[in-house]
Length: 442
Image 1 (cartoon, rainbow, N blue to C red):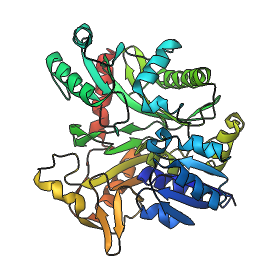
Image 2: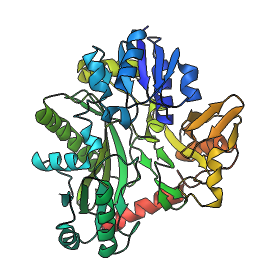
Image 3: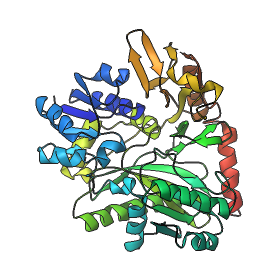
Image 4: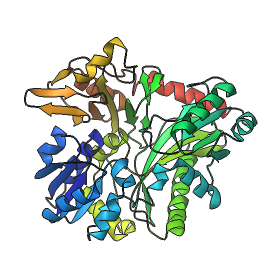
């Protein structure tokens, strides 16, 4: 019965807690959270509230509870060096050190690493610390993407055609970013379809998990502002209908080469999740970005399908023996829909903005799985915050069945909430198939 520490308090960590507690090793779960997630709390032997920027408090909690190993959920504790502090205390962790977590915390670091080691997949790009030369480079590219160099909660990337129209607008945005951030990346915009490939990594071995497609836009039809993710789906064959097998293999190979480059660059093995955001283009798979942890919502698509013992996977990651373990997932489809406050992603003066403090009721979600995200559990019930509230996941033999299960589950949440109806629909997926056929001239 190992004592395991989970750091994090979102729906992703709720899914991770559930996967840990399914283990045949019958672990005791200890959770360190910055807000009380009722789902994680219900699975934990003990919980502690605190800041992710305070590694010493996390170490104290770990020592008090004789933790065998830790699993880190979100990016904030990784960027704050929690894994380094745990290592100094003699406690191994599934999650990269602060230096290795630059894979996510610094977009410039990752672009430069991929370039230095001649790894395929990079766009044309340039990193700027001041405005000199930005306009010239903007005008060299047909269409551009602008990224602040740091953590933005999945909302900081600005894309021409979506967030701005002209190069002049791009220049204005670059000036704005540089007034708030030390550096920014300007890169070419790819035309294609995105997919999430979350890989388990022990430093040497890379194991891919089922592919997922996330939907960042707030409203149906991929409209509205970018969010942390409104939902996602995966298919029974663990691929995507708009991809070729070569697209996936290229993504895996890029990740293998990046893991090797990280070890060469830092002298340390990367132990944790390397989550690549990729895009299939007419010229093969290209790298959009890496995250140094499971995706949210994507973790909710893959962890419930895991047939292999998650605790055993964690132990092999820590030991560097992932090649000795056969990792299997159920051949099922999944659809995750996020229930959010009506005002989520909308301006503060919008009439629906007050929904972020409202009380909600959660009824029977039927066959769906429910994962709590940013909710506040008070004595008189559950309250919304300004962020995503609850992830509802349907799992079935077909995508349509999974979508209907998720849809029924979503309707069990009462209050001033909203969600995207179109995630997992044939129409949305067909749009992506048609797009890839067009750009590949098939």
